[in-house]
Image (tube, rainbow, N blue to C red):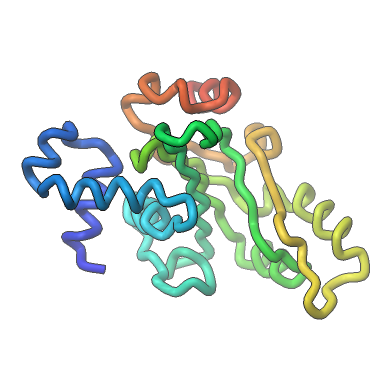
Amino acid sequence: MKQSTLELMVEYTTDILPHGDMVEKYGETTIDLLKMYFNDKNSSTMRERVMCHMLGIESNDNKLGYDGNDGAKEMKPKNHDTTNPKSKKLNGAGNYSDMTHKRHQKFIDDNAEIYIGGFVDGRIVYIIKVPYVSLEEHFSKQIFKNLPNGDELNKYLRSMTFSLTHYKNMDGVEVVYLTDNLDSYSTYLTKDLYTFLNQ
């Protein structure tokens, strides 16, 4: 991806310029496309790349492996689409798909870091860093419940989940990015998440 394209994405998602100025600078079609792709619930690629860039991490363009090329960094972005009445409020939760004992252990051995990003209409509101090991016990319970005999061929924990409740009081948890306009997004955050971010 060209650096200029990435910079445009970051400029859009951080809401540096008012919407009218963005349209004047880049054109209405470009801004409409950005909004459409940032709000696409089936693809988080743009949100992941923006998070990596804002964290100073070189993004991994491959679907396999970690999201960053310079370490065990996992991006977990969620977006609230204000035009979709079914879109849930941001709550700091996330999940891993198709988890196994082996994969879980690799994340522990690699000292992986989870970066939980919250977006509203493609505008980034927060990024929370959570050490994977902080959730090791919580994750292990889910894995052993679903895979009590260890890893087996074609068997996975389809969705390994975590929530704000599981990590908010853990060591090493840090809000590494927070918008200056948090109050304007409070409607789209759960009360618990808003309180946590305001600490």
